[in-house]
Each structure stands twice: as structure tokens, then as C-alpha cells.
Length: 113
Image 1: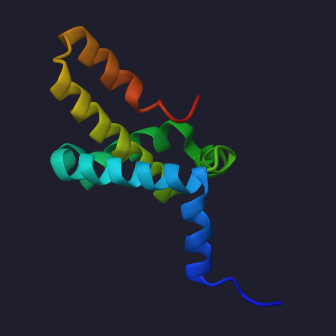
Image 2: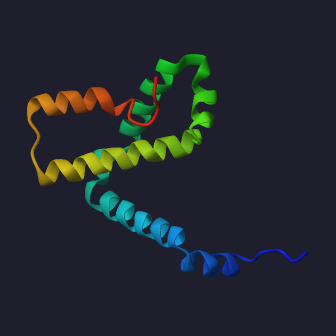
């Protein structure tokens, strides 16, 4: 059996709707990172990650895998969330109450307790 080459894989992915969606998502993420990257620094991502991880204790690894995440992919989701929040904040200034609510709920956005 012949191996699948990168170029064959890339050609097939380009032609599928899911491949196009992934490309669109990557473009949006890069644009958000370019404009709002300082709002989603590694230290902010790691701080939020550690906060959520501590809430799950010894079940953290199994919780991540149950929802299809690795530590790295979960941190990427946190970063995307922070970038998106920064972009939305630029569009419409939230009230103080909304900011407090958002801060409390962000850490649990991706994993239910």
C-alpha cells in the first residue's frame, strides 16, 4: 500500500468544506492574534489554564481527554477566547457588571464542572 503524501492530503483538504472552514478559522485566528495578541499573552493563558486545572484536581487529564482536548489544544482554545473577547470589547464597550460576569465564566467556558 502506498503512503499518502502531504501534497495529496493538502489537495484533498482544499477541496472539502471542512478544509475550507479550517483555513478560514486559521485566517481569523491569525488576524486576531496580530491585532490583539498582547491581550492573550502566554502568561494570561497559563494563568487561566492553571485556574481551571486546579478546579478539576486529579481528574483533569481524564476531563481533557473526555472533551477531546490535550493540554496544548485547551490552551489554544483559551487563547482564542481571550482574543475574541478583546475584539468584541473593541466593538462594544461592556458594562462593569458584564465584565465581572465574563471574568467569572471564562474559566469554565470549555469544560463543564
